[in-house]
Image 1 (cartoon, rainbow, N blue to C red):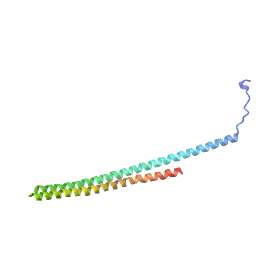
Image 2 (image 1 turned 90 degrees about the horizontal axis):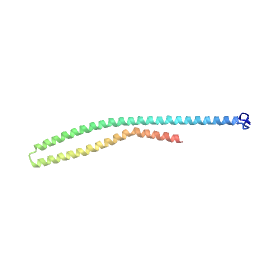
Image 3 (image 1 turned 180 degrees about the horizontal axis):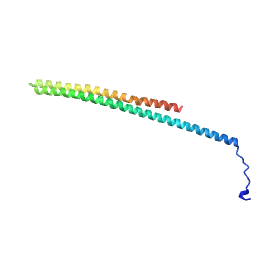
Image 4 (image 1 turned 60 degrees about the horizontal axis):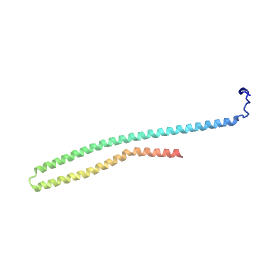
Length: 152
């Protein structure tokens, strides 16, 4: 028997079964593709929301920091002027008792300023950080909700 005269196969593919398999594979592939596209769209949307939140937080932090620095500069100028006035009064003191009293007053005033302004600026900085982190916290909460929804 030669190759050209070999008997034909007696196995015949089942056309209905083959068509069903192809249809199932096509549907499964389409469904997987749709899920992948939806997941990619969700990922892009989450990233965009995160970038917007980062930009908003940066703007809040920048504006707040500039305002805080202005307040610190004004407060420092005021304290410096008050200290200079105290030093001038100290230079004009005529007695040792007057010098000691002015010196004690100058130290008390400077310490009180440092404590009150330090506390005020620490609180203002904390408030600014909380305000700037709000968009990031909100974005993270939304992302967590979306991930939870994807898992279910």
